[in-house]
Each structure stands twice: as structure tokens, then as C-alpha cells.
Length: 124
Image (cartoon, rainbow, N blue to C red; front, side, top):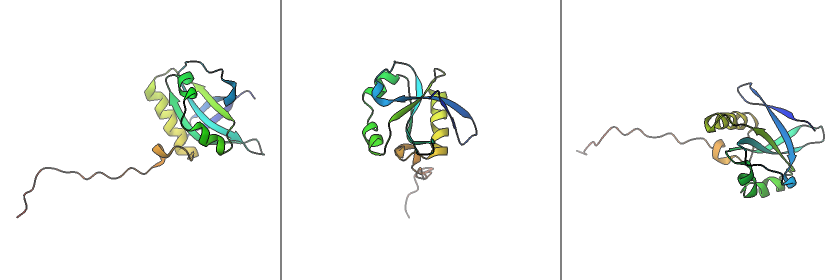
């Protein structure tokens, strides 16, 4: 398994390398990542997409990994990305919008419309 291209809703392709989560060979590198599993046809199914400035620290304590395992995940797809947090977050949101991973609840929620308040209007 050399790697896989994941295409965001924007049409941009990102190259990811698959690793078994249990390998524990993580390094403290900035990266985008996805918890995933292969189906019978060889297609990747993503259940969580994220970004981090320190892959080693993030994988050690990731709150979603147990839930991802219950959904059949065995791999972490990794895209090393030292271009900065803004670039990593754009990539994360691009892939979440395309794949709709079930564990990305914080990015899949519809934001509540905010009521604009222009000032105080006394009742009369």
C-alpha cells in the first residue's frame, strides 16, 4: 500500500499514506490525518478527518480512535503538512465536506444563525 489520493469537495487532491494505527511509529510532525478502513472493493471509508501540529501527541490521546475502531477502522491516513494551521484546516474542512465522516460532529453541524442585535430598544 503506497498511498491514496483523497479528493476534497473543492476538487483538490491530497496524497495520504496509510498506516496501521497500532504501528505506534508516529513522529511529532504537523499533518492532516483520517481514520479509515478499506471495504471489500478496496475503497477507503473515512470516519474522522483531522489536523494537528504534532501527530505523535495527537495519536497518543485521540478521543475518537476507540469510536473509529468500533466502526471498523484499522488505519490512519496521513498527509504530512508543514504549511501551517490555516492550510491544514482548509484541507480538513475540504475533506469533511466531501466525505461527511460520521465522527466529525463538530464540523458537520449546521451552524445556528446568529441574531443581529443593533442596540437597545426600550419597550413602550
